[in-house]
Amino acid sequence: MSVFLFYIYVSLGCASILTVLLYSIQRLPTPQLKFTLFYRLVLWHILYFLSDSVWAMVNDGIIPKNTFSVLAVNYSNAAILAALCYSCFIYAEMSTRPEMTRMQIRNLQAKLRIPILMPDFWLDENLEPRDLYYFILAFIPIVYIMVVTVRCIARGLKPQNRQHLKKYLIVASYTPGCLVAGGAQILFSLTTPIFCFWCTLIILFVYLNSQNQLISTDPLTSLNNRNQLRRYLLLQRDAKDTFVIMVDVDHFKQINDTYGHNEGDKALILISKALKKACGRLKMSVFLCRYGGDEFMMIAQTRKPDDVLKIVRDCLQEEIANRDDSQTYPIEVSLGYARWDGDVANFKDCVAHADQKMYEDKRSA
Image 1 (cartoon, helix red, strand yellow):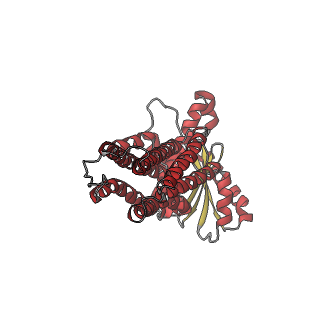
Image 2 (image 1 turned 30 degrees about the vertical axis):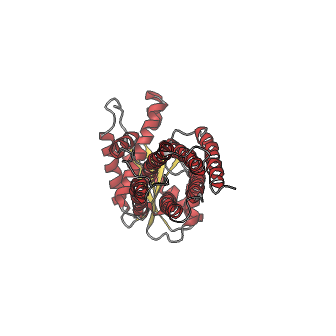
Image 3 (image 1 turned 90 degrees about the vertical axis):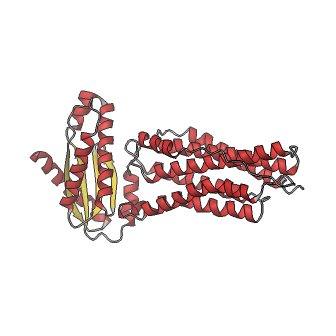
């Protein structure tokens, strides 16, 4: 058997597996931007595997090996690999910065979109690329994936993101794995599809994790839902200085009845963005979820819950000030908190006390 025949079979097989995955992603009933970006990332992987299989065919002689065919397949691999790692960078940014809007993503894409066509490289007398080609092939992807790894880990270690550390590490794990797998393939065995194996496995792993997050995430606000709240409560061991903070939208039914449910959804999204911003400013461990309807919940480890409420109100005012001028109706919230001792059995009572204070705040407004 030809040494490249196994390589060709594996590359085409992995491309077929990811094509099925691409179909599954397309049928997902979710408008979330990160799935659109993940779709593009999977598509670039498929194109790379197909291009790589053609490269193997050229080296195996199935396709006539000449200067044109060798240059064509190597240029194709280099360009697609750079685009693949670029897509990985954009997806990682969106996955680890959920507060980013579509406009911010587009601006980031425009800033980072660089020419991915490589400069000329030289072939030796056997029509094999010289070492310079492999340096050029790897340079731009390495820059992208190293930056992804550093940024994902740094964000995951921030106090307010510790509860989602697993998600950050999963996204970050793709990049060093690609570097090791690609380097091993180049240095030790060009005929063994190490890179192809790794990419397919990690893409499937990231997809399964994303599906799990989909089950645990509110589709409108992208916040945690009640399912994730239950998991969070079961994992708590040390609830020292922990407060449950309830956030309720004032006159929400009036907004729906007067301006329509679409505007009501916009109001909920605006408040969720304000709460995310507040969590980023608090510099502490905070669990944030949509508790139900127009109610949100924060579980914060702090000794000064009143300071948390102040930051939430400040962030809400900032978001209201920056909203579309056509939205003239007022958006206000009522807040209440209660100390939680960490016992899951006492959590409902704690929520009831926080609700009571929240309604006192609503009546006093």
